[in-house]
Image (cartoon, rainbow, N blue to C red; front, side):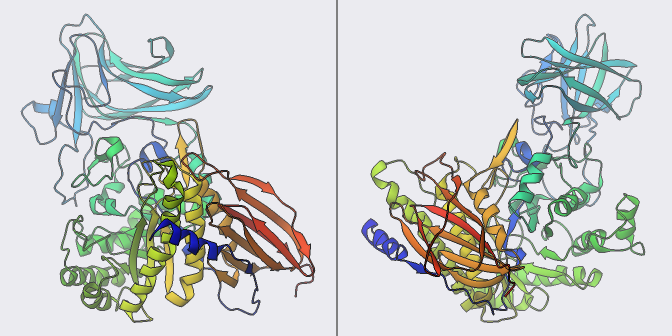
Length: 636
């Protein structure tokens, strides 16, 4: 479509919109439309919600050339001998043992996941050990440093926090005397702010030690997660949280989470699927089922768990359900209780894998094969907990998959997954800024809405509902955020609310909040992006009666409060709305920006509504959003 045609279409959008609420509607806005993903991708966990401060803290991968030091670490001592061996290598006797491991029910074929670092001081004339630089610490904060260490002789190990020049902020000592791994910890106090501190672990004298894992966490954390990021997830109104994937679901083994966090082996990424490129292609297994459920409860979200149907057996998938939902009379429910979680988690929503049919997931990617496997697994899960709501996977819309997967699975899985990402604007050439902006924003209707309609038509069954559980602007994880993304997010949420009832969208999950869309995390702070601001605005519709819904205006009513959100998608023109007076104005906030380019943000200001007769006239500037709330004090 030419730029002229796009501009012509957007001129149509800029015609005055008359908002005419119907207060007798029986349609409510489901909280499940305001979902998000928490997949272990890129920097969502590592350098994102995880409070863990160290790189490669479990020594995954292969060592560096010559010195044998694990990636992300450096050697201390000119003649220190570092032995870096995988668990399978028994050529170095006990020195090759690893502390990290997988649970017994581990079937995946991965490499270089279970390592330990053995440090040998042959000569006794120097300090030996390992260190890591680039650690960011806050002034007057405490950090817990935890080590799993075994020794071949009684050894005093020094743990020091220093500046980049080696000046010591604080140094503590731990004594080890066991020939088996023992976990001990010290509390380190940072006396000043330093974005590039070092952590060193060392000992003196001849001897051998083996380090299985190292942890460095701020003393204040929530299940190993950053409290500031957790709070922002609450702020954007996440009501459904999908975990552990996405693609990562095919790399995850839930029973590993039953091990202590430092003992859980890292997971190697399959086929370079970008699930962990910022952490050397490995996920370090920081969040388990218990942590995830605690997070969901903390932010008020329903958990939505994706199983691994390729590498977990039907029995193991059913055991996961039993762990979450079983009582003390069941084997895995009893295990959960023994681990300190008395009440069942009551997880309702489960996905039978992710994106089967695309070819990048391991397993049977044919509709018949996937459908057969899904039925086998789903029935086992339902035997354990009959009240589950299951979601099937596939490359939808796709008639072949509908016939051979979605419909056969429909007897146990009433939800069918849909994913869609739209092309990102490059904004490389000034004379194409408007064209690229329109291309992206228009995809809400020409791609996402169109896919929903096509899928609804192909399913042709009202008992099958759509789980639109991945959507975003493409490569939102590799580029700076912008008002372009914010307008797209606002328009998508409008579309989802508008289409949920007529098109059978049961739930939806943006992909994904942390460091890939709504929340930006930096070492010393976290904040909402323009997309995050739009989630925070649109969450005001949750649970309200849907009184009015068109592309650029949605109105809901709840507890005698009328909430209206308005969008002007135009690149360069204003847009007028007429709104009937409902009652006293409580909120009238405008989110606007001078441009839509990278690094742009919405400025927020309160504006006074202009009453013209019995209606307000609102004139929105280009690419802006407005939130209006009016209170009906008479209650009618």
